[in-house]
Image: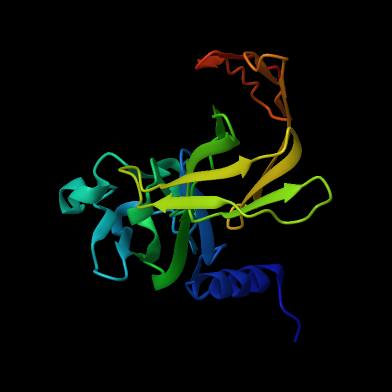
Length: 262
């Protein structure tokens, strides 16, 4: 005997009512960038009735409560102090199954594993997400130091994690240089200082700084020409840096006048 339309409707309704509860994170590994908010995605099978909904975000390493929601409101009194005023849920999206966590600002200490746990009338689930952290290196700040025998080119910058630094001469041969990497600053950044000493009157070098985690590649071309007049009293350095930011450096050393053009 065939099924009536009413029987089919009841059958479909029964199938929907027993659909299993699922929870997943769209990205199991997430990269947070300094200065930008991080959104830890978490999706679950929704229920229009939010009265039984409980959402909890925790650090896996130490079970710190990052954010929690139940009784249809945020429960910020349970939140660990480290996350005060830095996290939020998309409240209007909870009924659609969106339990994603927004965190801003994000710092180095926030890197780690986060556990998203959700329960409602349809079931319970949890999933892990790994949060990594990086900071773009600032535009290198160049300085020129001159004495009677040599010129020292130096740059400084900050970022995270440790970068790869390369100095190349005009024929793409690696140059020997000095590199200092100091401990992290208060913002959790590495302070980088690198210098190259030049004895030749004309130098054409390229500085490259790579932040592999963030695919950042800073490349600056430096052309240096150092000439003295007959009595050795005047020197002119022409410094060419291909950069987003232009630098003009003018200084006087002993009786030498140095003019910089970019």
